[in-house]
Image (cartoon, rainbow, N blue to C red; front, side, top):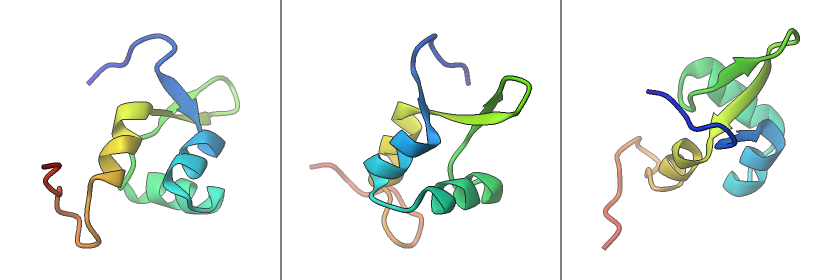
Length: 68
């Protein structure tokens, strides 16, 4: 799955969208809960906005919830 140029957000923005600590975003990335793309020589994480929104639409058990 690709992503559009400019469609990536930082770890901080993802954390704010999800209302969780930045370290939780990093842990979820490491665990594969949230797909991250590594960029640059430091390997900074970037996330596709739609992927983060998808996590918001998932219940506590990992199932997608209906959006009415």
